[in-house]
Image (cartoon, rainbow, N blue to C red; front, side):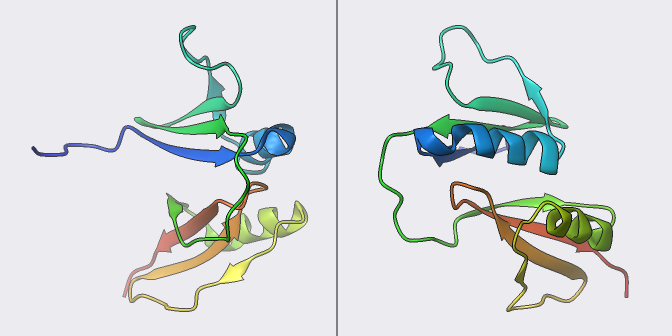
Length: 123
């Protein structure tokens, strides 16, 4: 088996956080919501990001402790992106393990899913 591309990432939130999480992904991150197939559950939302998708699913399961599972979004201007998150009241989690050639930070969506926000830097 050979994986050739990433099709989608699925994050989950409890029902009471569905609305605020849709606001987070649609407004704060500016992702474009796309229609879901009629056969799929109609709660949650699907967002198109280039050739990939982010699927937001609603699950009535208790939230476990926060994990390091995450989605990584590459951005063209890390400073402006950080300001946008701060302006929206989103807590910035500093990068505890910097990597050469990148600048990054982390945030959590309203359901506790971790997002890595990264910008490649030269030199």
